[in-house]
Each structure stands twice: as structure tokens, then as C-alpha cells.
Length: 172
Image (cartoon, rainbow, N blue to C red; front, side):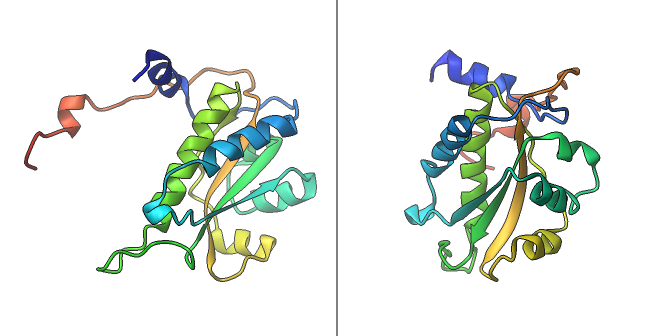
């Protein structure tokens, strides 16, 4: 693994302050392409991304979240899982959330590589997002991803467990 990849992963952080500078369509397409290329269970690719750049739509979507900082991002991406397409394990486990999370991770790392900021937002009113976007029943809004140029402010320190605390070898 290249050190540049580890450096990218280490420098990516949750951005909650955004510059008013709009994100170029070319960069939006690049981060979406990174998500498109993500692996998924049985390669079913059960994701759908809704890109909100319209101010009125973004404001409506931001109403599903309690923090005002979300409104400052010039783009809001709603990552949805398609439960009609997702792979289900024999015991019934639906891998939709897992697959969408992998795609979102690709997206946010690509954004960081392009100098853009993102944040995983999961604490939102999914029903309200569903209503605003008039989503069909099989599409579930899973993550809101504000996307934009980072604004001024301190970079949060990431506290991570030591490798020894999270890894066991050969048996749990």
C-alpha cells in the first residue's frame, strides 16, 4: 500500500464549516465516479445518489437535520440504498447498508483527494428526506453527505484506537 493512500486516509476528516465557493460539476462527477467503482456484495451495486445543488431543495433537505452548519455546503448528496437490488445472505442479512457505506467511503476519500470537505451525517429524519425527494419505498436514504470547499476553522483531531486494541490474530 502506498504511503500516499495512508496519508489521504489520515488527513480526511469531517468538515462542518464550508466556504461559499461552489463545487465544480467536474469534481462532483469525479467523486460520484469513485463511488460508482466501489465493490459490493455479488456486484449488485444497490446504491443511488441524489445530488442536490439547488438552494431551495438543499434547504428542504437540511430541515431533516438539526444542525444549521449543513446548509453551508454548496452540494448535498443523499446516498440511498436500493433494497430491491441488494444482496441478502441466506440468514436474511441485507447487505444494502454495507454496500452503500463502501461506496460513500470511496466518495469521501475522492473528495478529500480533490481538496473538498465532507461529513457523514446519519442522524437525520429519514422519513422527511424520503418525503422531500418523493422516494419510492425500496429506496432508503442512508447517509447525507455535505460536499464543499472547507471553510476556515480548526481541523478536528481524530482519536483512534491502537491497532492492538482492535485486532486479534487467528481467534476472537
